[in-house]
Image (tube, rainbow, N blue to C red; front, side):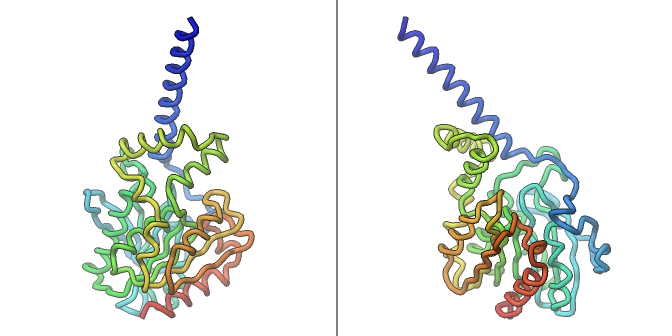
Length: 297
């Protein structure tokens, strides 16, 4: 009798664990379509709301997705900055930095990575498949705009994706990364603990397996901490707020520690997740422009 009870309880526990693993893998993979958050992104319209001239453009990822963007031309035909947004966001996320970059002489490309707003069947993979989107944007700048000197500024998942792409693609000469995570599964486990009170074990290994299977990905390849050291001697600038509740400040510290020179770190006291512009607009704009000016020759 006791043996049957133990077996029954074990089966129930296993079933619940698998169901929870499936559910939380769905939370990761499936994004909702939401309106632009003006408190977070500040500028929610197209570039004309900032009196910026722009061109509507699009290009295709290696797996056939059409990605829309805004190309904003400046005075230098051979320098451009690629703005890469985070998970759940869109191209408006980086537009706080567009005007000062354009004024400094950089062409700017802000584009939408894959998201259900383009097709409801598109999933989010924490940078694994999104790498193809960043590569397609680099192809556009190189082949359509004939630009060779390219810098990249990424936010949150866009920072993580940008780091991994930059490590492999030398077309990105300079990288600025705001609020990026060091390890994809670490940040997901931290959010599961914070939002749902769930321990990492035994649940997260099950979530990870479902995430890999359903997303057709390798979770070991969404860890920027493993790649950022490969970028040197190209420079990186890590920006991270100490009050970040989405990607803990420790991730910024880990990325900076793993990076090699030349590197720079803004430990923004009181800064929230990718909101350093709101914390100190002048420092945010000036430090980013100065970093690109110094290294993007």
